Length: 385
Ligand code: GLA
Figure 1 (cartoon, rainbow, N blue to C red):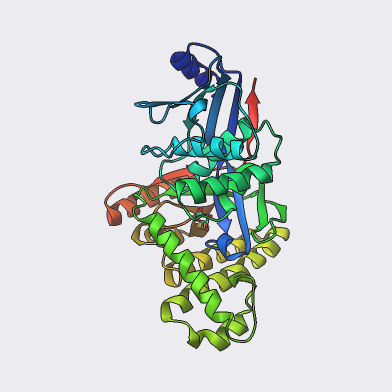
Figure 2: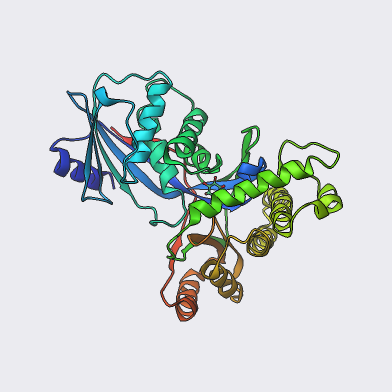
């Protein structure tokens, strides 16, 4: 891969890069729509992600090129900083990060040539945007910010420059991932721990529904707003909680009649999902993958019935997968509304699974899913000099 990146860099900029960096994509194993509700999530970094080759220039220009979107090259001049948001989407991620780094006191004497290449399934909800943000922040981290601070800076770019009101989970996992481990992250305090995720008899598989995630952002922001309104109402019933994840189920049951039916369902998902993360943590500590699989299935059911973020494609993946005796768990991952699901499949059965799911999904949906074996990798890093 390094040779491929160098070759491309030479093609575009007629020189070798100074350095090549990598930031992974992520999956969330369990704990969905929990980060912005202040609870515990269990994501992991993948081995696919975004490569960034970088070379300092002799002038004040910043040149951006992506192998994935080769039609446009963007050029900015440091004299025009802070940079404005561009119509074209992907370049806003690195440009937003550069603005944010400058705001935090980093000054750039010279510009750079940037070349990006991503092997993350496109539009699959595996956080390609967080991956671009974090790899850029890491590569230009002249102020030696910690990786956690780089994750927070990237989330701020997403919220305030790009305009998506996401939580911290994606940027944190991309920055802090650890090979063969799930991250257990408390999204309120940012305390974290790693749990070994080694599947000796099973394989982690990602299924891209290949459904375009239309309206995903507005529906995402809508879910978030409903959670905020519900917390306010529940906080008027006698006790005050910092976030929905802190609310005991018994308190919710007692006061649920104060919520609308929609609010009630959303809160129920959040509180029960949080309990599932805690149980998953215990199951992983005992290496009880079967139990973990059951919790994944319950998580999907709750995201379908109560949080209503799955849709026909993700539900088809879930239902068709669970008909197969060698699939022990399957759930959507990320924001939902299309995108990807993950499954845990018995080792040696992945090819059979792939064929079976491609057939049934195509019959029901009309086009094929993409089924990929995945391993858990490390967070953002330098690849070579
Ligand atoms: C998206 C957001 C995350 C998180 C998930 C849902 O991936 O970027 O912050 O809220 O959805 O768990």
